[in-house]
Image (cartoon, rainbow, N blue to C red; front, side, top):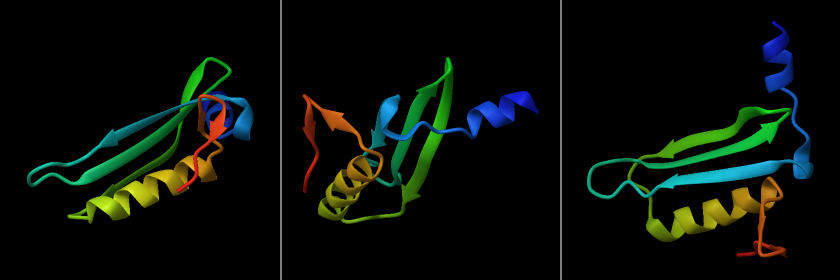
Length: 80
């Protein structure tokens, strides 16, 4: 029970985050998984798959998620 309370806690923009993308070439689905490190535990904060999406739509969706979860690269905000 204690583990669940730690995992469900998010610190927003003040944690180390990681983004995993599976482009789903061929017959596979496109997948997005976003995790954050909180108190030494990896917390999955977003996981979703998309069936046969438009590639440009997935670029826009990914950039939107990066902005939504305050994920930045090279000290710059990700903007579409």
